[in-house]
Image (tube, rainbow, N blue to C red):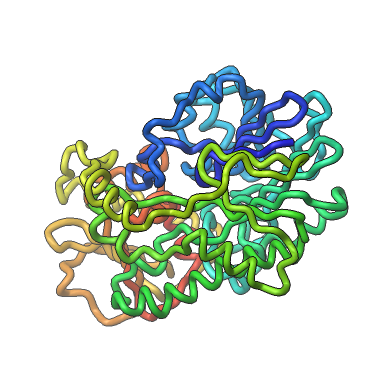
Length: 450
């Protein structure tokens, strides 16, 4: 059994003549153009994936379900996903790209061929009081106040050949995955390789203008880095794999954000994560770092080539010279007028309000959406409707504000077929402000319907 690292969360697992490609993202420009690859993947040879037998897609986010990458792959390759109970977003998106999709039920070890099996698990149970805002919390059928139920966005899987077991937990924070992990350990007595996250991929705290640069880097950013690297360690301690591979969330911001957000973006260097795990006395697992197209053979327990650390100075130069000038998907859109944005806001409010009522959610925090000409769309989360105000006429009150390029805003207001708030946030296209400085999940959840 072999595992070849391609990029970020993209892995190729081979056993008994069967090849399984995991979450292929190998092309710049996801998240409306802002997410780019480093090291550069411009010269990646897609022909090496022509003989892949199966593709496993863990969840909907475009660094895992990447339309730009999947369009370069053979559409005859069957795609394996979880049988989501709360919606068919993943299935429908893949079918639009031309793939045939097989949905697998939670916790069912499924034979593929040649004694190779896959077992997909729903990620776990979400409790934001424990894990704070989690990457991917945007879709699900749960009460935003109290009863959080099973997460509907992410999945983990085990791929095995009867002798070796590889567990891939993707982006899922440890605190919502404990129940699923216990199920894994009942089914599989040992895990040979654990693929796990080590860093975050969100807008927090670097897209919050209520923080100074010093606070972003040295206060809130430091806590955020500690949180993510710790849940990697928690996974290792819980699973006790022979080997662990930190992966996923490896990206740089291109376009205008390369100059504004990328220099202060909070993330952990993968070499620092590996050092943290190796030096921790509780970690009895061997940490592996792998460059693109490096293979680890579980039988010989050898890497095809030694890991070469990231050249940080080269990365900075590459960002400045190569990707800071890239255009975003929406840059060539027509510039919307103020009246167009007002009409879109009025119509979009119904989606927000209907979801708020459905969830029986209420808050005294107002939501500000900045339009153009210093006009703000103010909507309430307590049934008091909305109004348009000049920014100078905003009163002192609890609020959370959203500032986004007007062209992308137009897409967002037209609905998820055009753009989705969660993806815009992860892509760092939204600048936030809030007072008081506290996260209200109900508001952000309902914003996905605005």
